[in-house]
Amino acid sequence: MIVTMTLGDWLALLTHFLSLSLLSIGGAITTAPDMHRYLVDQRHWLSDAQFTSSIALAQAAPGPNVLFIALLGWNIGMNAGGNHWPYAALGVLLAMIGILVPSTTLTFAAARWGHQNRELRAVRAFKQGMAPIVIALLIATGWILASSQGSTIKSWPLWLLTAVTALLVWRTRIHMLWLLAAGGLLGWFGWI
Image (cartoon, rainbow, N blue to C red):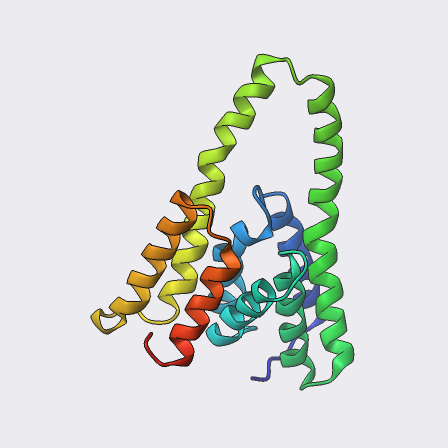
């Protein structure tokens, strides 16, 4: 996939990730639905397969969950530069600066203030009120990832696997890597 990006497009990539950074309550993965909307549907900088592969690869790799942002930036740069790594490095740099700097700065300041004022009723209420928002954003991310593989009746095994996995994560203490391995085996054997 080859895309043409101007300086304005690179700045748009940076500013979009800057704004998403401040919305990434619960981690950068919670903003994946809007990233998909912007990068795949609106700008066409990535294909649907590149988007979902970036998330799957980063989640399977050891390390922080934010690695998928670097892979998204890498793929955008590779698409823009015709497979030349300097463009890919620029994509990684802009995406990572955009997603990390605002939220890190805000988190540092808010955590410091929240710790100093942890006994205030408003601080306790805020913490309790954020839990449902984070859960809803994670469900939206799962929906985007599952629906990219098909939303027809023929895709029922994938949707069943998604629902069972979500239920297991919610109700048991099974480590997610075991569930990821099980899903990988099911896919490898061609059962989903």
